[in-house]
Amino acid sequence: MMSKALAVFILTAWFIVVPVSVQSQTIDDYLAGAQREMDLWNHEEAIGFYDQALELDRTRPRVFFMRGTAKRETGDTEGALQDFDQALELNPGEPEYYYERGMLRYYVQDYQGAVYDFDDFLELIPSTEIILKLRGESKYQLEDYTGAVADYSEALEQGPDNPELYYLRAYARTEQEDWAGAIQDFTVVMDMPPLDGQFFDKRDTALLRRANVKLRSVDYEGAHADCDLAIERDGLDLEAHFIRGKARLAMERFREAVEDFDIVIERYPMPEAYHDRGTAKQGLGDDGGAESDFEQALELGE
Image (cartoon, rainbow, N blue to C red; front, side, top):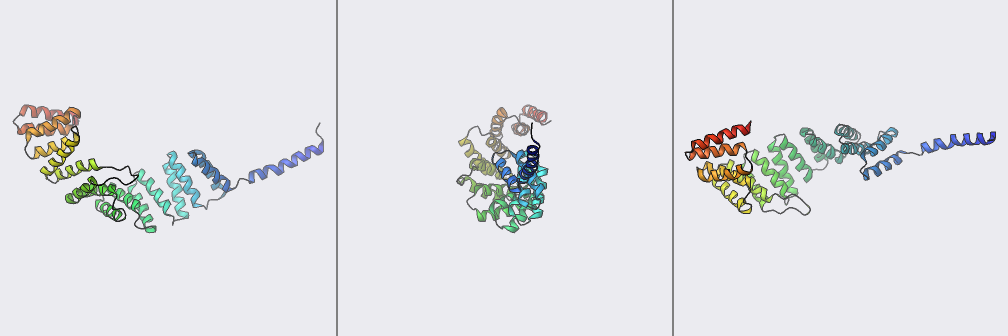
């Protein structure tokens, strides 16, 4: 049977030990636990640690920011944005916070919000190539092609050997109907190998993009020549046959146009190819074949 003195000792010890154990969990302990879980890609567990840290101290912007990154990885974009907002409210001078919030806003298609964040980043660190590129892409999505071209051009001042910047600027210039500028940029991409460690390699694609720009700018011979080159490299390049077919149709080379559209339709029967082949057949006097193609185009287009 336990003596009264022993019982008092155990009870006293319990009151002493338990509070010390609880109080030993400092904010740094929680943050260390959060970092450990982040390193293990256990984002839900990390969020739990950040929650506990913020219960002790809500004045640390970095904690809100890190919880926001964890929430982003779990798919909680709204929660992540709220945490990034709080981090920036506490420390509006941290460029990294604008970058991450801008990236997330871009991801959720809040392109104007992304532009605002990249603006703020560039106020703090001007002429940053990657941010200029991202802001240019956001402006492109907003159909601000002039702004996009300006950002890509400024980024190219920092990274003149980056083919992706030329490629993106070419697309924006195409939307501006700056045919000469777009053709020039696509030509640069065709001749420029990717940067070390860069997966971006659009040299072959740039050739067809240039062909399409030439087609739209009524340079049918130039578009035809680019497609010839693409087909020499890959005889089954359907896009090259499609663009060349359109160029041949515009030049009233109807029989050759039909041949190109035949190749496209055999592998990818799309409405526009049927319609254009029908137009070419009309040019050849094949009214029955033309009518059949026009009907097929309408059926596929429904």
